[in-house]
Image 1 (cartoon, rainbow, N blue to C red):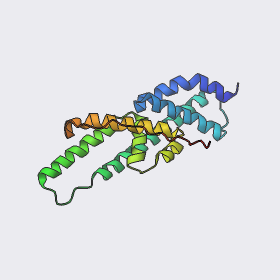
Image 2: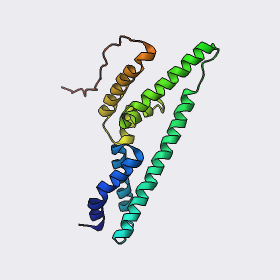
Image 3: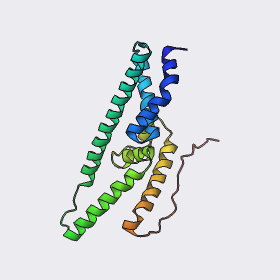
Image 4: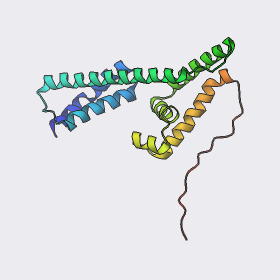
Length: 182
């Protein structure tokens, strides 16, 4: 067993717990710790003695959590900028409705599970296609489509108090079938 594998076995759980306390999201914490070990492996850092290795791992995880926070703040600023476009020639009542709806949409998007939220934002705010999102996140195109359908359903439910109950046609997931020449 390599020294890095030994560190992984010994420190995985404590590092995930540490990152989870900082992020408040266990899946994100596991992702951060995994990326920390991958970074050590890719950069071929020499593995120091036990105490120095422990300190190094916690420092790397802390730095990666800080990067996550920075990324989230940038994302939030960008989202607010996107939602800040005021409707032209609007009355004060319409502006207030617009602000209320914008705030409700922002809260609803924030309530989506992290992976689903990421897929939704890449699709709706960044304009990426399902294929592009699948490539970026290393998941299947069908998973992207399913997550988008689930996101829209959840957002409709969360925003119903602002839009009123509406009858929506059932959502269909269309799969491309390969035609067979015969």
